[in-house]
Length: 83
Image 1: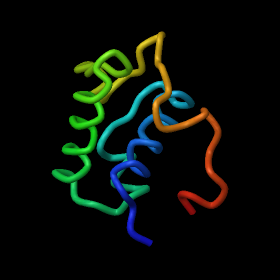
Image 2: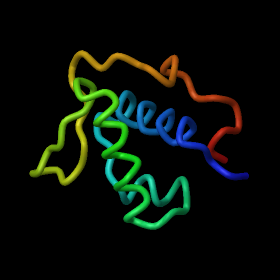
Image 3: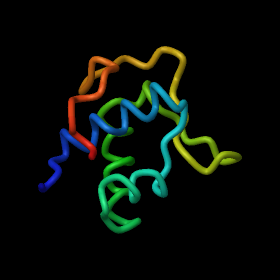
Image 4: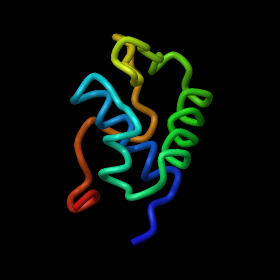
């Protein structure tokens, strides 16, 4: 099943909310795309919602802002969405 940009941004928000950090390695594992493609989606998400994530160079990933405002999710996974 092809994942849309909205699906990927939903996953980014879920990971940020539940794990506290999102990086390309985790996205590659879930969406089976190249590192360049996953980096593109992370940067797009950050451009659309700059106050939700910030790049944490010591963790080499995007950490959630304490004021993360969901735009693509209700903080609950969609059934079977990433199986």
